[in-house]
Length: 90
Image (cartoon, rainbow, N blue to C red; front, top):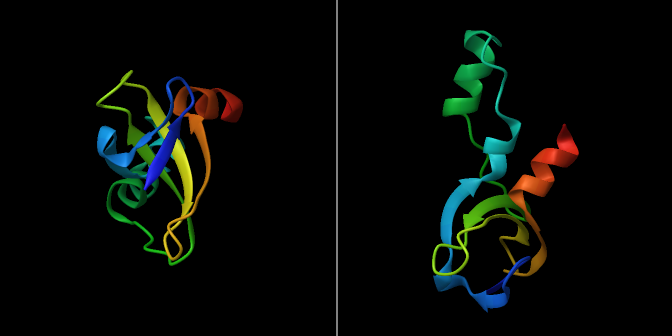
């Protein structure tokens, strides 16, 4: 599989470290309470199909990248810098 780093361009996925679901971008506020934090820490979906994952370009520029991909076909649909994604949500 090949991933496109928004900074470095297309690279082999072995240059990237897989962090998991991009749930880190939906982190609750520090004072959100126990239930939102329990959900954030412990609950994960395992969908077949389109997912949004967090990867780090560990073997390159070090950027954190949100990768939208299909887990059935292995097609990479989009990549965006995590900091740009977080800024857009603010």
